[in-house]
Amino acid sequence: MGTINVIYPGLLTSVQDEGRYGYQQFGVPVSGVMDSFSHRVANILVGNDEKEAVLEVTMLGPKIVFENDSVIAITGGDLSPMINGKAISMWESIYVKKGDQLSFGGIKSGCRSYIAFAGGIDVDVIMGSKSTYMKGKIGGFEGRALKAGDIVKIGVPKEDLSILIGRKVSQKYIPKITSPFEVRVVLGPQDEYFTQKGINTFLSNEYIVTNECDRMGFRLDGEAIEHVDGGDIISDGIAFGAIQIPGHGKPIIMMADRQTTGGYTKIANVISSDLYKIAQAKPNDKIRFKKVGIKEAQNILRHVEDTISAIKKECALLKMISIKKYHLKINGKSYTVQVEEVS
Image (cartoon, rainbow, N blue to C red; front, side):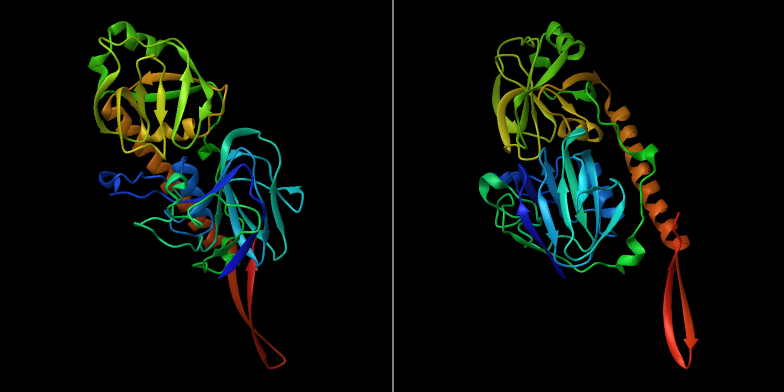
């Protein structure tokens, strides 16, 4: 068990895991991380279960002091992470000592980073999740974003910290986060509420992320999308990545903290494998939508899962080849020595 001390919280830093499923029927949003791939990989790098809670950092990162030795990994958008003022690598497990300070500089790419700690974040599980739903003050750390002075508990690592050091993700597996984003979508469930001209407009034009973008949804600006007869429907459920088109014709992409139901027509849904692109988009970034079929979306998802499996294998292989234990006897005394290969 360890702790971290929040010196400065950043713009928006919150505890998130995969989300709170099974409660939308009661009006409780799913919440959870915006960028699932980065979340899962960060946990793999520090030896956690993929679903373990992390800190999701938005735009401007926090300053955190470690009260114990630990191993961390930072993935997602590059917000220039530093330990004691010196730049550190992302997509790699990093050993930190008691008293070290983690901070962030400016944005280099994307807008959301994920900090995983060996042992996970020790907060209460509420309705099956540690995720923070800030509007409802549910879960996470006291149901809110972190603030200065918070002391956050870190769980007990599953493995010795020395075994976790030096894990890294091959460059070929790290997503490219650059605008304009090509975002693949499956049309529906209300695509018949749009004229053919409207669908063509949606698929052929570039849209710009406005300043109205947060964990609930992203409003886009661009050419209006034409309905057959208005943008209202009887309210129904809203999936992560659903693209609502209200009467004004401008898209709204629904994200992790989306409401459970909504009464606007949904022209399409972002495929799950591309949700990270929306999560990492900043105001003024550009988005183009590309239509794919369900089978193609499933094949893309299989490729993502294959990538996750490959990253796990790389980490397991590193563990096998880089750590060796020796039992020595010197002057009648027995010692266990652990030797790590360094590149």
